[in-house]
Length: 202
Image 1 (tube, rainbow, N blue to C red):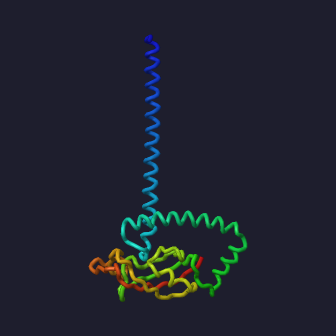
Image 2 (image 1 turned 120 degrees about the vertical axis):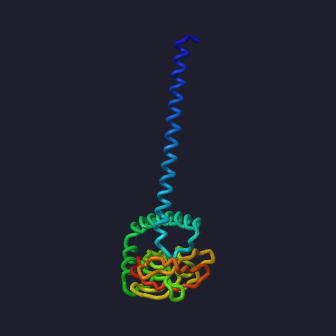
Image 3 (image 1 turned 135 degrees about the vertical axis):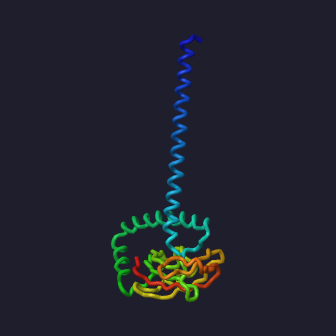
């Protein structure tokens, strides 16, 4: 092989190695971007579900799966919204029925609620808040949603539940809404009462 051909072959190999290096770098950057996006979505989901003190569990892995389930539900809800828009007058009739003062919340409705949770007479930290609760979704403690069904907008009522055995502990809540760390409360397996007000039914 003459020197010119050897040099040309070396240059081709060098160019191929450079191309392969760029492809590997590109793949690595895409992988990093996907991981960063996944972490951001996870943190965003956790921050949204973290505002709900009446969620099913305070355990880490269950919270992550709830976050992912919440993202899947949002995607499903958005596709249902598109389907509802195409159904025309049926949707309008349902929406107008929900604004009727006598309309009672049903499974499948979203009840915009305000709740205050207590164990005995003690309000606990994380047990008070506002939430758009999709009735029948199973996103709250077992039995909670069933007790909201049948109530009207503006009604205030008590919901009685028992926390799951693996539920996280909390603290008593101070008047300013902050945790009183000197007064821990065990929620696992404990009966609690949530005073619920339905602010809107969607």
